Image (cartoon, rainbow, N blue to C red; front, side):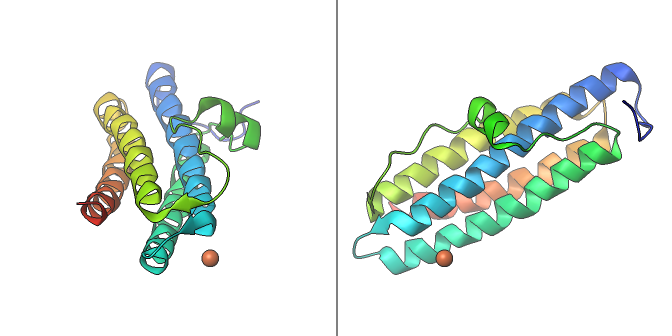
Length: 156
Ligand SMILES: [Fe+2]
């Protein structure tokens, strides 16, 4: 069922919609992982890591909304359901229970690295099909890479 008419031809729309859907699940999962660690971190650096994690949550939530609404704008239904996120996210599973502060930082370095790799692939794959969506992926990548830098510096 098409409610919103897309400005893009079908081939380009397929490329862009797959990229937007992939970004949506990665960002929703990143927000969940960051909250899980925010609640479970322990250790002498608890407070700084705990607060830093909520900055990642804010970024992930903001941009998950941006990519979902870009999909809607292009006439493609975004799928942010829990089952879809769990089965298609690019982030590995987080272990249950308390997390030492150094491990918490390492978990975020890995999670952000995985999402950034996939986001850069989306930058490359969408430039011809839709530079407007590509611009969104570029902005998201810049914000994620800044967080990635700061978590790497935490364990430096
Ligand atoms: Fe909190």
